[in-house]
Length: 229
Image (cartoon, rainbow, N blue to C red; front, side):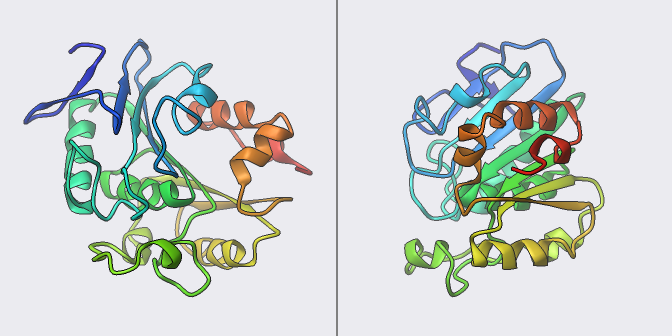
């Protein structure tokens, strides 16, 4: 398998504007990163903030602000198709820890698809779990988009494997309501930060983002790292 493509049981998918696979690590850890904005993967939503972390990395960009309901171009045309693709990826990396990471829009598939494929650990920042809820970001963007998976509560209630950590800003009332709901699900820890929806940029500004992401990949305790943040 080359540096520019990732293999599944059925095919190989090349690097593109919507998928980048970085396999240049000997460690048996695969981090799947779901972009939170339709932005070229070589910029802020891609690897710069993860460059210091030693693991294999798969970056996904949906191309549209549709909460991954229309998949990822060149990979899958639907949410269920993306789930099937990542189930194949997990099978191909059967001896690896599978980790899922996402902020805002990217946190939705990090949670839903992460639990669906049986990821070992999930880090979800400022997520939604039911799309088109009044006051949500998704209701502003989805419009008439057909929701193939608009409610994650069934899959989250069934979670028996994935360890979930949710970062939420205390200054965003909507995000706090979602976080309180998430706290009712199994294997889920909620960590509150002294900010709003912009949890990752906030952690970067206070000099803690790198340590938090590294601790997540290593399976460490994130809470002490953000104490009083």
